[in-house]
Length: 385
Ligand code: NZQ
Ligand code: ZN
Image 1 (cartoon, rainbow, N blue to C red):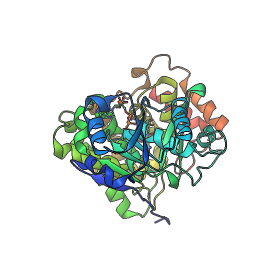
Image 2: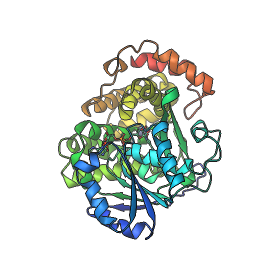
Image 3: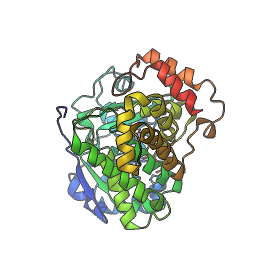
Image 4: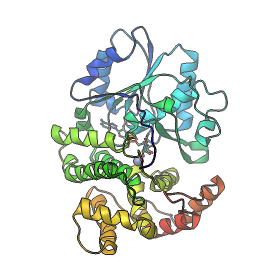
């Protein structure tokens, strides 16, 4: 097993009625910036629950954080915090609102241009603004991790950032919030979480035995509940297992002591930046081709996954191949269209464009073995057309 450090300071509150605990979590007499998205929280009652819980607090609202949050939008919130004495930011939303809030928290006291944080030419300092979250969409794990992804509209770049300073102080995760989610977002959540596990699992064989078993447990749970939760989001058993699986998929536990990949995400982010395809849907497009192109590197693990998760039998080679097919079938069952051409038009130049971008950024060796170079990225994307 590789050496690791496990640090996660997020106070995670799970279950029905937990929003009422907000006053125990945010210091009294603090001016709060409430960040949210396009208004779903006003229709489903979550906004009212938050406002009731925060009675007595001085609250400034910042709405309009869009899916795949934009740098340009977030900088307006940064200005508000710089002008007013905001002591705490409360993010109420899905991954986009939470990621956006992480960026805001990091940007306020950034000594250079905050876009430097996204280009990784500036570190996130220690003087971030404290924030907590009320999760409304299980998918990203952002509620219990310290990373985020922000898009710079001006350059059409979707870039990730992270720092140990950017864990939420707390996250309130009430599974009942998923009742109002459109089916598309529920489907996205299942597939995003599934791919988070695979990015930390589908690498090379290693000897961190427990990590593999936990990962396989999350995958099997998502396969078990995914198709039903999108039909019945008001079923609390399904909703609660879904929400907890999504958090467990990316709260920093699965990657301990093991090699990780993340190249499906890196390539997928480009497809969102170029064509505005939902994050999870980009992963369902990229992963089957990536596992096919990188078959030799990942064959052993694909075979283990095929046997343990899908109960396949046969030679390593045949089980590994079949496991890729089963994965794509699961994505399709979850409502994904797994070809780029089914998600956008005018995609012909995508492979070259993305490969050139990776070259410009110096991203020449992705994946656990750093052997996903620009030629492989091109091949993966061409295969996904
Ligand atoms: O904006 P509102 O009106 O709130 O509507 C949202 C949005 O349109 C809606 N929604 C959220 N909760 C709802 C609801 N509608 C009804 N009822 C509710 N309870 O859902 C839409 C999508 O929301 P969004 O936050 O964009 O979805 P998601 O949670 O999937 O987040 C995606 C973003 O997270 C990033 C992605 O790249 C993408 O930008 N990721 C963040 C990660 C992280 N921080 O660790 C890891 C992931 O791999 C991912 O990259
Ligand atoms: Zn993801």
